[in-house]
Image (cartoon, rainbow, N blue to C red; front, side):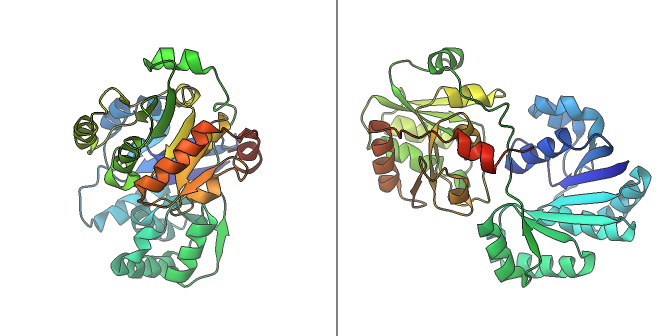
Length: 344
């Protein structure tokens, strides 16, 4: 039996964290698995993300404070030895810095590091730091998208990168009944509905999507799933544009398939991305999808039904959404996701 430890910066609802939970859920039965979060505490994490309760016995929190914490390396070395770790898998630069070095000091057999976006490598200090840690820790490098791999090759000066696209559970995300889903979520019937899910943060671009809605007919509404620091600002924007009755803030939704079932079109208006999960989830539910052409987003799209818009361009986004809603594609995208992005 192998002991596999996934290491993340924090355990809050997000793409990396959801993927790590899937890795644990679908791990081979002869493996022991744990998730180590550098930041936070177990009680707080479960309170804000109840889904974690199902794997509570596999969670370890180190409650790291902001800033550098060199002593954390030695705490993690002790933890890896105690758990008899065979494989340590780090996600993003913080976990690589602490857990990567700790894994080598603990004599862990296999160290894997996955990059989920590479735009942070545009920062020279992060780039130099990551190169140094990679030389020291010597992990096997994985990218979740070809675009991310290309950025890694450029900035990290290495070709030893394996691309493994992120997967989703296509047996959970399946087509459903639109009217029933809208009733459950309190959304209006008889309108065309655009949906967007994700953290309400500037980088996710919801502001642009609300701007795009001002250019669309009044029978088109927008549903936003998620919470974040920009929620109050987005609500003020919707009111200022007199869209209060057309923009629906749904907060955190645990049953995301129901959200996708309620939609006519899914849109991810991000300004930066790695390889996002939400377009895959929506398309697995047979919802036509538009993403902005940033990071690896285009790699998530079904080539026969998906659409791209330039990042940061609300006018182009509105035109593309209008066209999608007027003439839905004859081909549905679920088969593409099943073939390319099933977590199994």
